[in-house]
Length: 74
Image 1 (cartoon, rainbow, N blue to C red):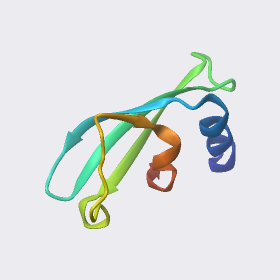
Image 2 (image 1 turned 60 degrees about the horizontal axis):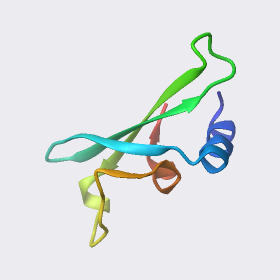
Image 3 (image 1 turned 120 degrees about the horizontal axis):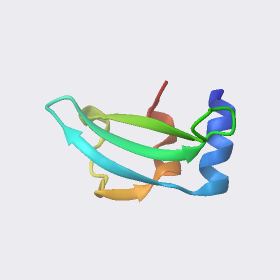
Image 4 (image 1 turned 90 degrees about the horizontal axis):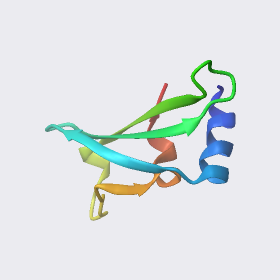
């Protein structure tokens, strides 16, 4: 899937992203979306949020994946 297709799926399906881990540099979230090109029919997306960009924002354990689009890692 290309990035634009992934973004469309995130808005259409509205999956949840789940917090996986943190370190001194970043927070890592993962989400599962349907991937109609894949044999397994699902795709795992990883979002890496740099600590330096958090500011005063609140990042929950579970949040809509579309809010993390700018942090998608291919």
